Amino acid sequence: MKLALQALASAAAGIVFFAVLLCVPAGTIHYWQAWVFIAVFMIATMGPSMYLAIKRPEALARRMHGGPTAETRPVQQVAIWAILASVIATGVVSALDWRFGWSDVPTAVVILGNVVVAVSLLAAQWVVIQNNFAGASIAVEENQPVISTGLYGIVRHPMYICALIMMLATPPALGSYWGLVAVLLAVPALIARIFDEEKMLRVELPGYVEYTRKVRYRLLPYVW
Image 1 (cartoon, rainbow, N blue to C red):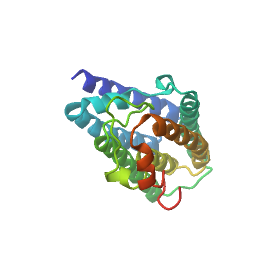
Image 2: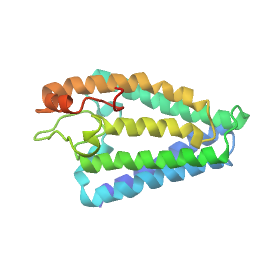
Image 3: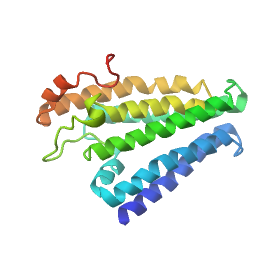
Image 4: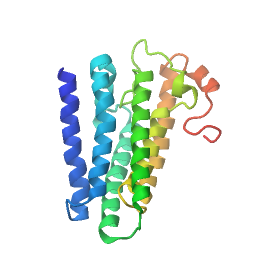
């Protein structure tokens, strides 16, 4: 129950965060694309979070323990700060784009963007269900197994590709194309995070080297 309440409190804080991030640069609360995005984001994350709180609380606890201060590796701390900066920049640029009409985004594209955001968020939650050790911070725990089935049988970092797809869909969902420029700032940080994480996993997680030979691609099959 305590963990579920913490998740609800986190969701409430998330609503406030996104509302301020988007409506302040937009100059109005009458930014319907922002409110639809916030609703989609919260629904797509809170439903699975409540499931995890009941069925797999340890997995939810790992997901809620994140952020730069939760990381123990310097590369990961820098990467998380860079990704957070990209998220903030994406919201601000998208809201300014909507406010000043730099992009002409049809409603159908806004709807499609929100659908992709929802699907990618739900897929990310599915990754957590498949791998209870998929925490928000990089660490190897005692008796942690290598997961090689489900989405992990396709790419080695399904959580990250879900996050990247969600980030790319966010600007169109907010009625912006220029916001995509800010998303690109997160790509080098994400790549650095993956390289550093795999460096650690090869040393600390038994069986991971063999797994990399079985699943060759990190994010995109037949690409990388």
